[in-house]
Length: 128
Image (cartoon, rainbow, N blue to C red; front, side, top):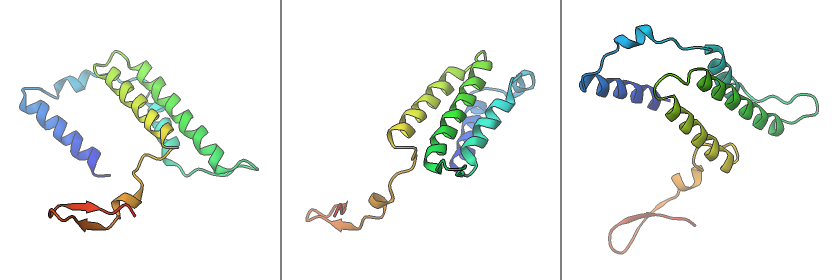
């Protein structure tokens, strides 16, 4: 969770170091805040089971709906510089999530694999 705040502080720091200013944020008009807040809320709330429909079905629907809200937010604010890059990042994330079956984090098994020493002194992770 700490990665995003650190990256934001670093990005602002680099911008200021390169002669940038935060004054332009006073005049920045961001439209349709509710879209992004709703999209993020759909990704953060626990996935319920509704009636006879299991959470394994509702989860993907909620995720797809959240992306619709986030894309709509980006379209409403497309005049803001960098929005195209945000849309590319959003689509790249959607691709990874889709390929991995809605899981964005690495499998814990390679991370917890025991480390073995090779005969040349280098470390390697055991895959067995």
